[in-house]
Length: 501
Ligand code: ADP
Image (cartoon, rainbow, N blue to C red; front, side):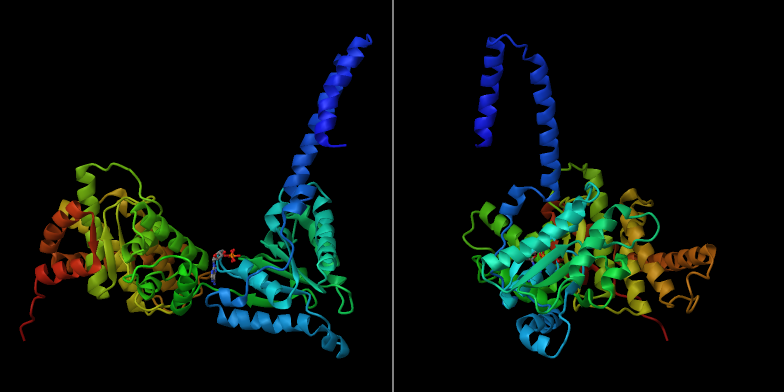
């Protein structure tokens, strides 16, 4: 009998009882309480993923994503494929008495394609794909998590049999939620869940009808309980990193395959300007660019749409915050300060100066990173610090005072200073930061910042005319491209004072 029929029958029964002379009120109250308890349990178990509906929603057959659809990650893909070959050639593995690989741990920042890799792994090995996420186990009743894990593995076996596959991949995203370290009383509520997962993994053998491989993803590998990382459990670790320039270009190409690009769209340049973007951010960038093109009623996505989409992904959507004219001027001076020093210390590094408020910022300079860089010298970090300090220094030069607009800049400058000191590049020499007093660190950091601030202010002195010329333009046009800004700089910078010999 359907749920609808039961619900429909209830009022009829109540009316009938009333007709027979019974008092239906206690029954109604009892019914309501029972219904509320039932609904509560349903919604709880639904949230836990135990509900039947949830099971039906999940797509369980082999995913249609191949490794070719994942840009970059060359080394990770190779490592993963190598491990997966164990699943494909399982008979030979069994012959040699090699124990099967039971778990693969993918670790890396969010949005780098870990889920995609797990799906591609299922595609590559022709396995069914069953998935869950650590977050589904949050606020579970004791024991329900363990039951959920049991069901998950059972479901993997059932699905494989139903689809006539002999292997299944169980993907657990955000494994750190259930697999966090079990020291002290922290995470105790997840103990049973984790134990059940370990038990299921221990039960995997190479001669089973359906071979199960557990793939887990985390961006907090350091948080995981050592029991999970022991041999025979998640003993293959593959790191999935942020893409380098070549990989970014490839991801952008993949993500724009189904989008109409204008001939002027320069994917290579966009890849150049998106250092530090994850695959998910690049996907979002191409999507936003397409939305901008549609808003513009342009048939194709042009370079300016892509460029604006970078700003959107980096800084957030444009806001309607109405700044006063006075504030706008100050923001313009501040941003020009950043831009001037950036160009001086690293020519061609400014890609755009903008006065359009986005996210939390009233204006911003988009930098062009040049080449992807992972190592920095003292000089390079000092230059970065000077770029950070230049906004406030410019305000000081023009107005004689600073504003709260430099707060984030100082935070960032502080982070760079810390890197400088901890990497042994400051005048303190090579140090162990745990053995140096807080005062010493603070004094050194203040000294570095003061010296660099003075140098920055001196440098900016030579560009007073650039400020006045660029200010009007920026206030009028809101955006100055890097090349336009460089022209102004070339034209109006004071010639450096020649030293008399
Ligand atoms: P993670 O699991 O690491 O958080 P996902 O695999 O969920 O990241 O990636 C989210 C989305 O970002 C994907 O659906 C895809 O559109 C895009 N993406 C991420 N990395 C890549 C990549 N290397 N190649 C192509 N697309 C990617």
